[in-house]
Amino acid sequence: MKVTPTALRRFHKYATMVWGILLVPTLVWWKESILWVALMSVRANVGAHFAGYQGARAEDSGSGDGPGSDTHDRMIREMYERIMHYEP
Image (cartoon, rainbow, N blue to C red):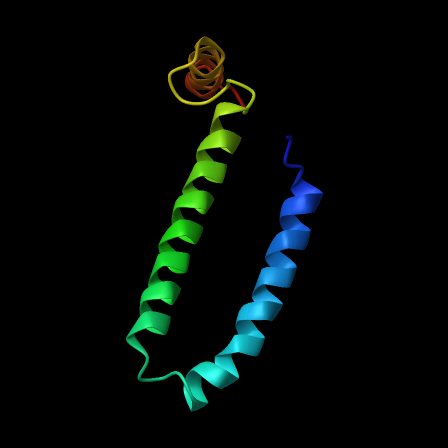
């Protein structure tokens, strides 16, 4: 199954709405529920790890021109040469 950016955007939009709606019962009825606090903590940890996973995936699928790549090093050398040999 391929997860598209559109599907992720839609998921995050609806998840935000659901958690926003759950804010009221949390503050009114469930504020002393240890189980509810534990579930919210697990949900936050899963969400944070999922965000980290998505960030790593995005970095891996980049163009390969990041620091340490041959293209990046060549671009830095070219810019350095242009700056050092600049004549107004």
